[in-house]
Length: 214
Length: 259
Image (cartoon, rainbow over all chains, first blue to last red; front, side):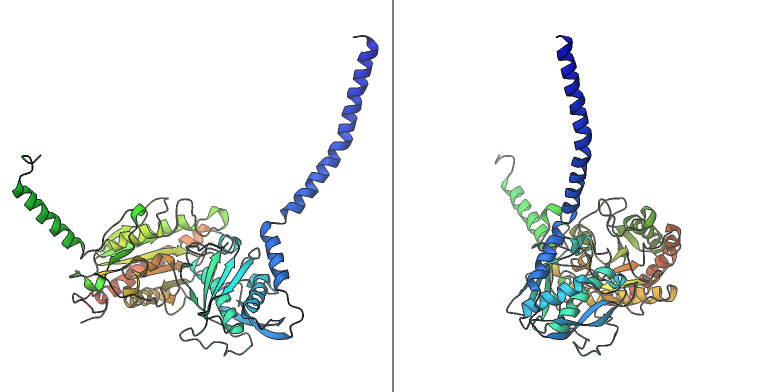
């Protein structure tokens, strides 16, 4: 190999290194941007899809009663009145109130359900059993404990009780499957009573922030 | 073969086998996790029980399930194990025999934990928990809400309704323990709560879950200081409940009804 070829190869190598030095930072930025887009989880995407499907702007607004925690200790529920455009169809109405419940109150410390949880589907059986299918986050992100799990389920049942009288009891599924517990304590193999709870007057409470202790 | 197993011996074997089957139909049968029974013996059909002698302590979670997690690596599964040791000591000093669903970092299934209690005669079941949330320094006792009980068939009740026959006794035990806890832990509810706790449903004995708030404390030492008072309240509650534990010997009488 003569010196001319050696020089040409050297120049080509130098050019390749220079090109790589310019291109790699651009490639790195692209990969980072792509990763940020993918960080939007599957659960979030599903949640947005479900919310868009259940949004109903044509319905007249009514005062819906939603149940979130009364304080940061999360020992009790408090009814909060929210103006919502609710459908007359009990299934769609259930989806609307539950999606609003999932979206959470203004004060995030009063949430009863995990922010990443999504309502995947809601069915109403002829006997009044509502079947709410939640995403995995409902089971994995709810704080572990009898009290916190009870508060989460109570906020759902009491919100349904106050706004969808057709739902008599509630069955909770996680990602389409029956789960043994919510987060290790509360039994999800059974149904939860929604209306006509013993010792409770359904929907008879004042709309003001009345404690909804179990 | 015939010479090794004469006719008289075969008859004796048949009698022996028949007597074993007859006896087993009147008792709670332990089972392996692979063959979880769908039914358990109806307590109302049992012929005799000698009063409350055994306490089954259930430190919740364990193994790969740490339960509630707090700052500094605090894990519910570790704390309840320490609590169980303190409760055990107190109960044994009161003459109770104490069994534990786990003594190390393992995680038996809900059914295995219930089976330990269901295999005993004259036992109560106490499940121990530390919550993630709630007013710090308060303790709540939970019993199951009303459950449907299908008619016993052949002296057996469905496994998943095992608690139904013991609800009134569980509530009495719950009130007894909650009363003691409320005296020691200000801000705790005055009465036991009802919640559909999975662990309690399959337990054929007076059964409660006791939950302390919470792992949200920054320092584990603060939580540890609450354990002796909690253990003492559980022991006193069990002792106070002891005279109420009467299981009827007559079929058809609700368990817990005092003659």
